[in-house]
Image (tube, rainbow, N blue to C red; front, side, top):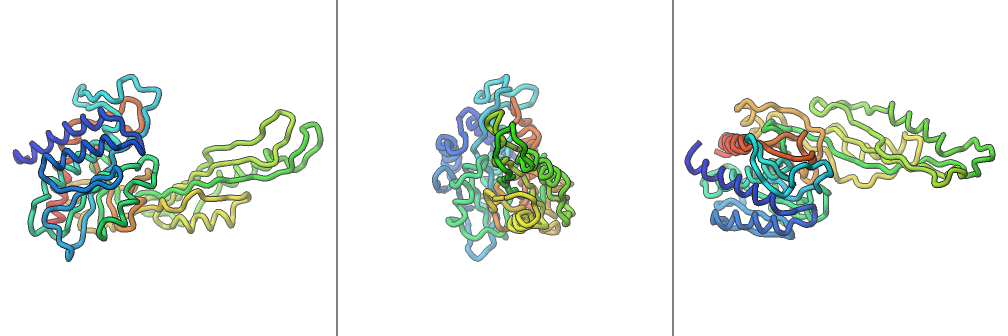
Length: 356
């Protein structure tokens, strides 16, 4: 590692500690946005801000070249009640940097900022580089990365920073949440009723439990359909008119969300209404030069079951970052300092193989 890269790495760790110390729940990221602005100012990089999204273009941006987007988010979920440590007090123990957002996705964000800064002034790159430190990822809000796309130039390929142990998530599942309604005939509990909505829901639950979609993805496997909520009835002596359910569907890259909705609305034995169809699955060609550069470094390709800001993008995208997804949203969240050091080094090496 060069001396300049080592300095960038140490600066990134300092920034991550600062970000941890600032509350930045989704829609409340104004102060972390200011901290990210300070990074660009200190490193003499021109930047812009839109809402709580901070973004910058490489110094020698050339409209005739294709564009690579680097993106990660600086909002966090709220800390859960099982935290034993102060979620806003960054500290290192046994090589672990503890704090809310350290793993998801602060470590990825500061590593990408360091990587962008490394390449910022480079000449003769075969792609432009844009970095967006985005807001409202955790709540899929309207003022996050999706709001930036009309502002930015055309994006040809993207790296989305999420914890993947620096392995190559070449696809991720999309998401459709359905509100389901199972109908029946309301009545007094004391009287006969052959159309009890609660009993009707049994066969509906069985249908969802046993249902499977035909197309299985080579990378992402089957579409996963799960009933996650059920609600019906309000009084012990009243048979309700309906039972409400929530269905969580994780969509592979063989289907669009629109196709999933059409299939289920046609076949399911209940009324279904999708909340949104915009969080589609994402993928990048396994032979793409960006993937090839990662494979040459011994990184492992896989399909990710979790959702990220990739869902906002229509271009090919790769999910890649330091940290471990299983730590995300956990109590006493942490990332290894070594993971950040290695993450920056691997990001730079992958882009060296892709951009030069």
